[in-house]
Image 1 (tube, rainbow, N blue to C red):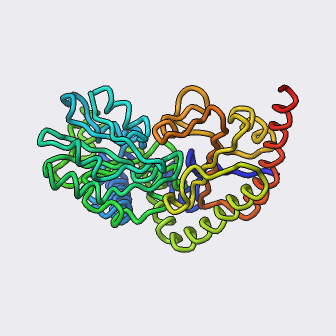
Image 2 (image 1 turned 90 degrees about the vertical axis):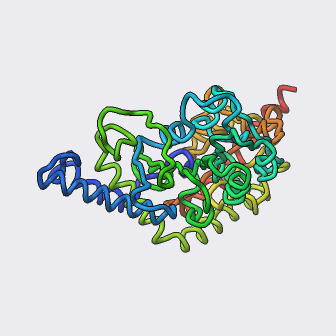
Length: 375
């Protein structure tokens, strides 16, 4: 038995992405800034990729800026050298947003027990001096969806010139961002959460609202992000996004069914287990649970021994696996429970759920028995 339930960390490469990329590693290889025919073909491929990402986000082609991934996109959106008190972020943001914001004296908005940032809580902190407000569309640990369209409206009603940004890295596989992110000025997205390659992403920015570039000196991306573009990676990214758009309805229904079966099966077999957030508050692909009486580190060790890939916190979090600023902000005491994130994606099957239901309950029972024998 084995199962991969860590799509929120990195989703397996879709075959559509691999097929699209392969020619650009050999016969199609060219620098898109070159003036010859091969270079023009590479530029055309990048433009076609921009079109796919524009369709997926509700922006235009010219508003898509390719980057090296979600972290760079988040850092670019937050910016550097902003005066203290001019940035507002949610307490459960990804570190790629939270750290550069807090270092610049950002206001941090608290969340409710489900980890939701409420628009009125954001509005209380907005002033004429506010420059950037950043609230992620879907939390990377709990899968909670944020009301970012309502937050954007609340911010712009008070500070029309403020830039509203959303880290949509985890949202891209699940939400129609053209609707969910209506009114947002900047979105960060990346390839490897949706079945594209690692190391490629984009920040999409409403025309005329681009922050100062972090990388300069090459003129690429219309002077918004210098550096030769990763043509093969970008093409694979766009192919994965297009595949995700094409199968969205079927995939969402299938993953919702699988996630429900997983949560219900674990609840039936493990005493005291409970979902960390309400089902209605999260996207289908992330099931976050708390298991009392044990801790995460030994549980993850036992699960890995059985070839079940999952996690306890964000794969980008530093320190112990169980440490989570997200759970702390939600008021969850993780010291007496084992947080577990089981994340599904495009390749998840019934067999993966069967394996998880066969592996996790015995591992929990083994740890609980061991704890009782030592007390």
